[in-house]
Image 1 (cartoon, helix red, strand yellow):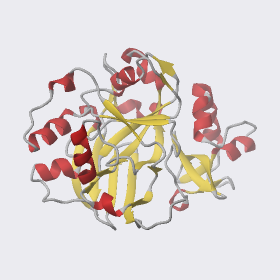
Image 2 (cartoon, helix red, strand yellow):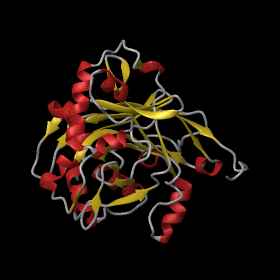
Image 3 (spheres, rainbow, N blue to C red):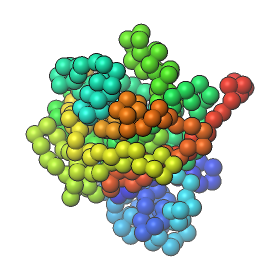
Length: 323
């Protein structure tokens, strides 16, 4: 299934994509003598049983019924508009090694010891469409081409061998980064904060694991997926990699993240930037020439099977009244 959250009547609702239409799943369930919540987090809390009901309702749903609308006119939000948490990994060796080499640093050996991650702001989530940043964010504003998972089954101390069972689905993620802020604050050795906490975009939909089985590469350290990853800025391709090139699997990241901690349905975990997947890496390698995102730029991040996440940069005012 391709699960979405869309706005209808001024509020977010749970939907699914079928034959070019967005189906309102709660209304479709009611029309087919079933029951589903109208919120994606509530659906995830129901676990695999809720997803099974969702699949049956979607199979019976009529894309021409009053509970459906054309996909092109649907007001899509992030699939998970209010995640319970957002972690972001560092799983692609090419990105890490190249970015370090570009600033004269050797590859850090700890990369191969454990999968690292940081927490970002789960209250600064955007879906497809415009993303408003502040003027200071435009000082070397960057995109980051990533894949993200959503936890669908809670657990603590989850071994990598069982961790894929805890994944509800996959989606495209853009970890927008204000590099000038980020580089200055990271000199204080506490990791990224204001350079990262203002905007993360997710979408266009959450693709459940069953839809990706033909691209699955099973392994002792968890599943990988043979999915092409591409970034375009204003229609010009900048980046290309493959999700199977993750050096740490999502299963291994889940094992690390859940050590002594209970993961919850609705937790989002990003892969980290893929190879060539940001201007920081591209500029340092001479592939691009000091290029950064500007007001009005459109970023398209595409992952095979997961769709295209399209965002346009807009700028707010530092003088906006506080609330």
